[in-house]
Image (tube, rainbow, N blue to C red):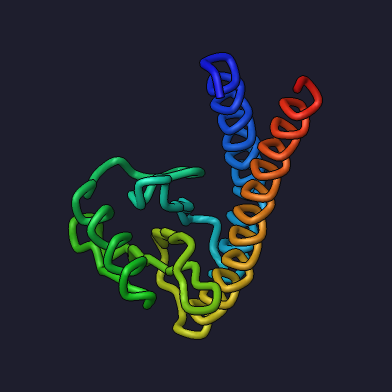
Length: 167
């Protein structure tokens, strides 16, 4: 392959990655509404993180997230992701809000983390509902990732067909 072909392949891969990111962004508002409904309070901040190509968790959507507790939030996301289990922390600095990190698990693999900060007291059964919502979100995130992968492969095959035609 020449430089032009490599450049085109990189452009196509970037376009598909951007489309995947847009699809994840579109999920945010409905996920936030579902989480707040499950919690029974509007006083909650929500964020969705997924691993990038290098495996680092990156926030792809966030709403009303407090920029404090950066290290606590990063380590909580990572522990939930790697351990594939929910972690909850009581933040005494603001009167006892709950910061929860719910892994998005599909099959044996974590595909992301749902981060929720509830400013009101939330019953345990409501957290169970949030975890059920996270399981549904995991299926969607996984499906979107697979669709992006297939789109990129289809584009690569189209490039091969185009190169073959030119020969």
